[in-house]
Length: 272
Image (tube, rainbow, N blue to C red; front, top):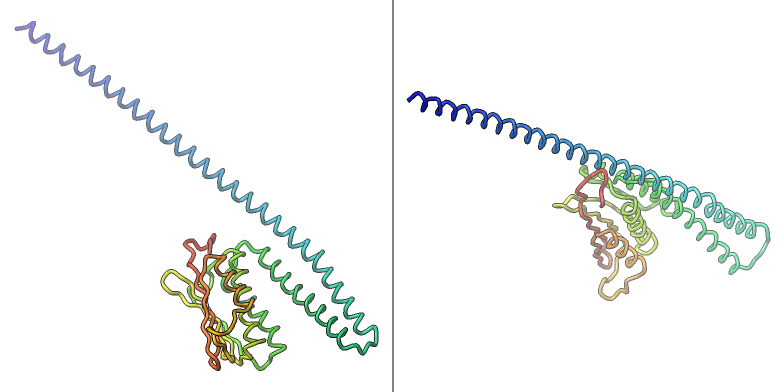
């Protein structure tokens, strides 16, 4: 009986030792696993940090390149265009000529150089910005409209932005293409439609941004009228930034151009 009690005690003691040993093994395994997990998380964070630093450095280099290119455009091409305008003006006013064809030709060259300078400045403006807000876009369009009103003071303009889009950001490429499309539409309304009122407004519909450029000009028959380069250029620009372009017009009732763009999923670094 005594020997049996001793065996039972020994068995219990052995089980305790095995249990303690297993506990320490499990504890060591857990600590090793936890340490490895922490190490993996630390490595992941370090990788994310390095990736973020690399991305920032790349963006900084791209911005430096943009600034360098914009300076070259301004200093070289801008200066050359200004020289052309000055030379043409000197030819026009320096020589007393009664050749109307020559005068018209010189005026055409001067006007073309002037418009090219304006487009160059717009391009430099876009290049110097990583992102453009709708407010930036509105200010640029209003600046263009103010210049247009010098030639057509009787035209009334309006530009309304949905409050949801006030600070909405888009890439400079997208912003520039929208600006060019609006610019082309306004030019068409002034030059060809002889409009008295031109309005630009935006709407937030579902997950899209809708932009409307409307005028009360003479309009045209969309079935019989051949599509000009202006409409084709606008369509290409908008489709090139994943948008949809359409228009409606009726003789005597004006024209409306509609641009539909996908709303960006992320605001500051939008791919819109």
